[in-house]
Amino acid sequence: MRKLTTLFLGFFLLVLLSNCSTTRENATYQGAGLGAAVGAAAGALLDDDNPWRGAVIGAAAGAVLGGGITEISKRASTEAASSQRPVVYTRGSTVVEATPLAYNQHTKCHKLRKRIWRDGKLEEDRIEEVCEGQKITNTY
Image (cartoon, rainbow, N blue to C red; front, side, top):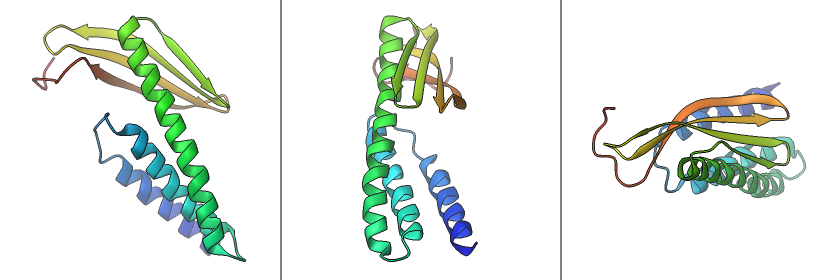
């Protein structure tokens, strides 16, 4: 029970810290880093014989999974914004759908609705922006 509680608290802390960053340029690296951190913590807690081995294996698997899902999510947003058509990407049991909603001529930003399903269950539904250049104001 203690290991499960520690794992849950560590995961909760990592999720909170991951939401502090807002840059899109290095989103793939952030996803890989978060995946590696969660994987390392889980691997270390689950491998009773050799926690270091579990941490290394968990970090590697988490980095690949986290970076891959973040990359297809970013790619779906960029493609939907440029084509002005809904885009759906599938990777394993993860499905990412990006649907264009509006374009702001002043800020040169496309507003998109992004939904992510894992194992057939909707995990994330959010509105985000993809800008062609630098955004010059916070208003719409």
